[in-house]
Length: 366
Image (cartoon, rainbow, N blue to C red; front, side, top):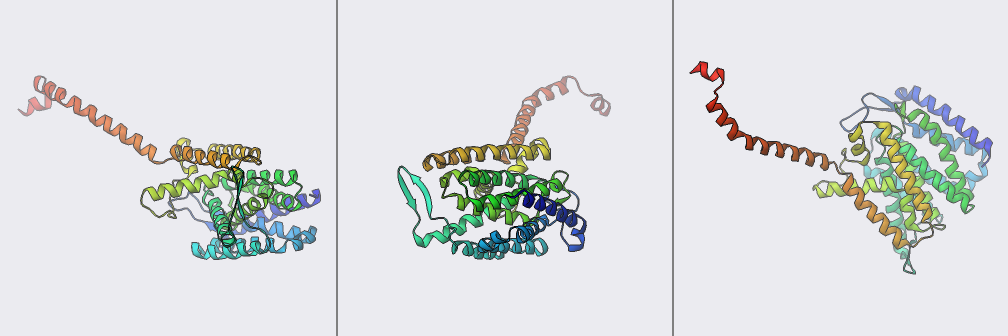
């Protein structure tokens, strides 16, 4: 990548983020705290607008040939960005979001970007039937696009976790000399670095759905593009934290007889924040875990897919057991029951002591 392009993009992103912080109220892009929010005051949102406009404008001026060559893919990214902006303004329904993601998926599908294999298991390639390629691709893209949106709950969390993923895909692009992956990842790494200067705790601005949905879609896109270089199962580790968080939260909701799409405060970051009450600590911990998983995923890039799937499944069950909000309630319940048993054991002794040594108040009343 041209250093001039990167520097121009970074400075443009800084300037647009600064503008968004100052004019968010004027544009109506303000995040008002509710019962599920981790912040207590109104915070500007819509940094996704600054990130997207920075990339598209600088690409148009300094990398126009690239933008035209990959116009369908950038068009698909634009569709997801648009629904994100609409959601920031009007809080659109999940069904409406899926419609936009569906058309964005169709756009890249007809330009050769899709999932047609699940990997190699015991020497056999598992290829998807033609009729299932688009539905499976849409399911995977829509799932991860919303998964990244779900972890956007603490200052700096979604942006820094996404940054680790983009860096990993950049390494893949450099390793296999894929210019498009290099360009796309470098662009998003640059704008994310600018964004995190404003989003690190205490945050001055949130990315909003315009940012989280766009980032999620692009990471899903990069995951599919990387399948031609690395094993499909290894990608699960590269994008592990959002996937594990979504799987765990939905599993817990189903276990409780609730809708898997019901919003709550049972995400991994809520659990970890509840332990120490420190936002920076929680973000650094999850960032470190994601970095370790991404390294593991890259190391497993040429490994047997069965081994990778098995390890990821084991990882899911470990996380499912560890990050459970009910553990706190169980501990509290055990303490309460233990205290009650102790009291029941002391009651006879207390009554006997009261008979032999009546209290002064009881004696005076007699």
